[in-house]
Image (cartoon, rainbow, N blue to C red; front, side, top):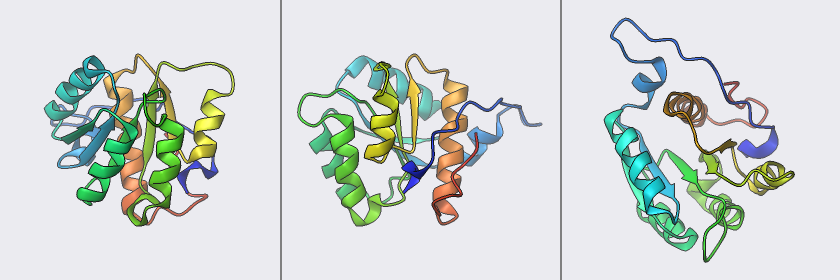
Amino acid sequence: MPASAPARSGASILPNEAGGTGAQRRLDGVTVLIVDDDVRNVFALTSALELHGLRVLYADTGLGGIRLLTEHPEVNIVLMDAMMPDLDGNETTRRIRKLPQGRNLPVVFLTAKAMPGDRESSLAAGASDYLIKPVDIDRLLTVMASWVEWSRTGGAPGQEPVG
């Protein structure tokens, strides 16, 4: 599982000749599932991600996210909030990891929850990476591209992306 190593995100972003970033090129056509109960966060993320060529699905609960994931096998990556009303992000991620398509699916936490131990708890639950809000969109795109590429190339534990 991607959580076998600590998150290693935060690489610099270098524009390519065409004016976009390598991360943007690698994410064109990717389907992302956002699981977050705050519609303002979802709107901001969806607007930014769609501008970069991603297809966005959205669930406002953990159970809704799991349902969408089972209905949409084309999902390449999940952006997960930590605190939600029915299932929190950690329990939702544990359940995703039990699904056939969830074993190597990148699950990146985007959360304002930054207390000591929160990051470690989420990684132990199966999170691939853990980013604290507010998140710079370029940084997010780089992290997402690294995890999607890792997943597409077999997603072997011990070979997690180094941002």
